[in-house]
Image (cartoon, rainbow, N blue to C red):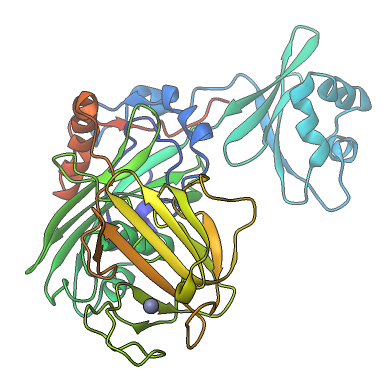
Length: 436
Ligand SMILES: [Zn+2]
């Protein structure tokens, strides 16, 4: 078996592929996971490998009765030129292009593309193979006198890697030192960040075990990495995070007991430059000069910065409201409410009664009402009582549903073993070849 982890010496390739690939996830968690439809098509082609050190018999290249030759597309080439150079005829070109709809992939040849031409022992043209993209390959085959074209999924490898990190000064430096890509590091920070303060809760000497999946083409080209599990073993915090895809295709990271690591609410509903005024029940008002509680947080940002709904909800107020200026209030179920004040303008197409999704733009930063400069005044209410948006414990997203716990346990088992650096039992591996 190949060793695709060679360029990452810090990682241990534990085993190859696993369960069927999950479908797409929240983009912030899973930026590399956009091609799972194609990947899943390859799962049926996998086989269980009985022992890691002895490749199964089907991993060997089956002997081909045809002679193969590889030709490379040059600038200005089309199929006719390419075939002529290879000693094939205009009739072969015609038979190839009329082999079926899938053969149209040959009309967009690019310099550097490689075709594998197939000939019988007597030299007669018998078809070709052409990688259409990283996930699929065109096959043209002769059957008696006619040719047929078909596009088949390529056999992709999926390899689980495990990396151990030791925090010296920061998560980012530890991840960088271990050779994790930027994308993986961002996924890691995003998964941990909902639960752990990455500055205050991490201590020198804290250990992390990180498990991620690498997807590879048959020629060992990496198609990217997806974070699958992480364990934090720290002085202040311990945490296991396991990626799970539920039967509806929704993915997320969960603790071993099924608790969701994601939060229902965004901590901050915009990108801001600084906190210009904190939550303070006894504050003196900067404009009015009188003691007046500040029941929200002021987040300074340039005028026009988009303001997003902190969670799924419904607009219950939208309009001018005295010192608050242009203000939107959202209701999130019966318990929570959020308020957004001093907007320069509202998002178009919304009104009282509109439902909004988490992250949806509801307005733009301004300084309407009593404001000394452009900022968002943001309030968070729990059962009608104002809470400090910076420190309030945000409600969790839904845990694994009770009737999915068995499925969750099944998906989590090999990942937990991988976190321990073990090789999971009953692992499934990608076949290392492609059919000719
Ligand atoms: Zn304020």
